[in-house]
Amino acid sequence: MRQINLPGAGIFDTANPDFVRFEPDPAGNKLLWVVASHVNVPAGKFAQSHVFAHVPGAKLFLNCADNAWYQNGLGGQIRGVRELVTAIGQFSEGFETTHFVGHSMGAYLALICAHEFDRGGHLVATSPEPVLCRRASRSRDNHVAPRFGWRDLIRRYRRQPLRCAGVTVFGAHDPVDAGFLAQAAAHPGFYGTLASVPHHHGVTEYLTGRRRYLQLLTAPGEEIARLTDRGLATVPPGPETAARFARFNRTYIRMREGSWDAAARLASADTGWENAGWQALSATIFRQRRDHPGAVAAGKRAFGLAPAQPIFAREYALALIAAGRGRELRRLHQRLSKRKTRPPALVRITTEIERSGLLETRIAENRSTTPAKRPDWATGLAAFERARAAHQRARTHLGFARAVASAFPCARADPDLAHAMIDTLVAAGLRQTAVTLLEGAGFAGAPGLAQRVRLLLPNPVERHFDGNFY
Image (cartoon, rainbow, N blue to C red):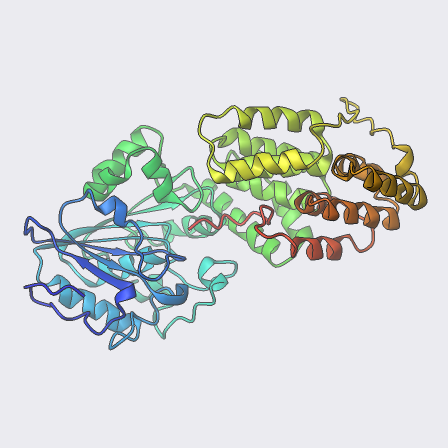
């Protein structure tokens, strides 16, 4: 680690250099930014380092191994969260002002520092988990083992408010963030200024895309006020909205536990809430329950509320594929294909739509939902096997597989025929389409078959909505 001529120099010398990096300020300013990384940042890399290249002041970047929420420190003599916090405090004594910044896992550490130290700076925390290992939380998904006394920061600091000015911003479209937003009113002094933005867990992505994140870092209180005035952020929720956030989180937990009936009842209780994350979660649940009209309606609402976010376009597309709604799927595909910027997530969605087979084969659908005519080869297993063999000899198996995807809703009442159709899709490389169609199927063995096919996906697009954006 680079040595500096300041009090505290050498404190991190025994730590693993892959998880700590200090960048002095060339101008010699006595300003320090402590920036803690979120999960899945590789060793040797540090979150937000590109953003802070444009911010004056010295930077202390931190990361940790195994997404452990800093419970195991940084290695060397810093073997736990207590030793890490002490080291940060000693290191920051050499500066006149210290700001604490972090997202998700990093925001957990930033909140600790803001409660422990008054260094004349401020806190910027986005989408933290101040209580670790709640059901269906990201820390629990990462198998975090909290040290004694560090699992529940709200309880730890219940009598100790923030020691510096601070702002905390959650994503209103994220089911895990929703759980903390629902309970925020009970802990008014813990977060500092609290706000939410209409986005999933990637709050920094939302603010960076609107060129507001640098302003939030340098003047957080004023920037939150400006975002609120412009409708880009919302102040803490009132009782009615807090109850909706609580239902959002509870429904997600039921879904993750596999309690689909309970999740469906909760989702049906508030179909009109204009929250894209809630609508996307509802679409996933309705699709799993084979309520295709409900899934399509919820997916369409999610996409309409946040059309720029690929996760909601995906949920709408999957609902349309499962329902066999080729006409609406074509319109969605055309709309997505015309976009000037096409990030990888959007490309994957349009590719999956193209592989569904519903773009080439027009399904006879109208307002009375008249079912598509069943092809002759879909009337029984023997006829299907003859048609499949003929297409394999003619090397037209891919086109045949797309036709199979379109005809699958007509044939899934026959389990043997449905299994043969899924085998055809898998052999043609349309594995994702097979998974999506199986989610809407009710024949014996469909759930287990869907799980086996899902394991064949090399880079799965499809997974149940979990807002798992870090």
